[in-house]
Image 1 (tube, helix red, strand yellow):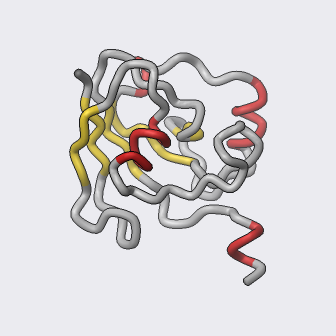
Image 2 (cartoon, one colour):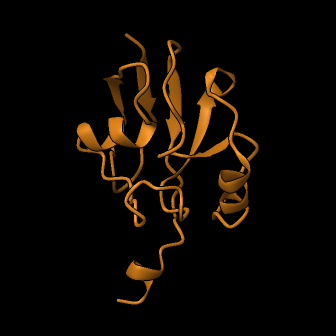
Length: 112
């Protein structure tokens, strides 16, 4: 079973985490199932950028992003060449190393 290594994030997983993942699961669902509270304002339907992650290792094992995801990622804070939306990055049989960006663009939390 592939593993996802989540790098330390000050608020969401200060120690980092190494978790098991099933092929076909999204990086976001794996994170949430392991109590790593990545934001997902659109409820995982590829309509926002709050679940933006950076795939530090294993990026090439993921299915290529589609045009909608690419358009949304263009609006993400801290965009990098290996950025993906966690709801769209589907685990294959290869381990991943994932960094959760320090900030997200979330209009709901910014307005409070």
